[in-house]
Length: 131
Image (cartoon, rainbow, N blue to C red; front, top):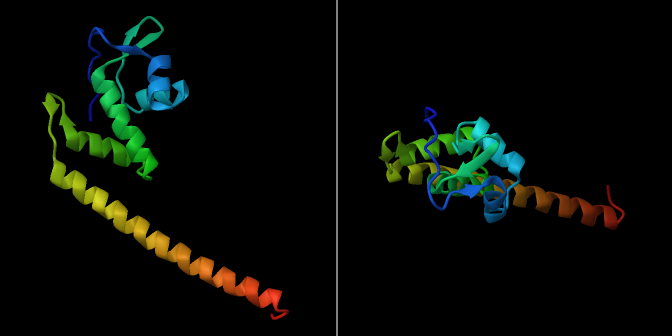
């Protein structure tokens, strides 16, 4: 995804502290996402102004991070959702990637369940004086 020039601020654009509060992220995280090219706020000197598009992207970032997608994966998901001229919405590919993540998490859950059972058995054995 290529960086686009920031547009002049529109009515309703928010500052970094407003967006930070709205999404429950730190200003440092917002600056990181900007450095990664995921957000492109308009700058007025040192002041960043976040558009609705930035906030929509941040919504995808926050959701993606909450389910374990990496920044690179989130970048790809955003690219599938939009192109340089506007919405792209490749929903089939986005859904396929989400299903793959579900499969990965399900496999991890079963591995964790198995490990917990083994640890429980070890603790029971140790408690009975075994081993």
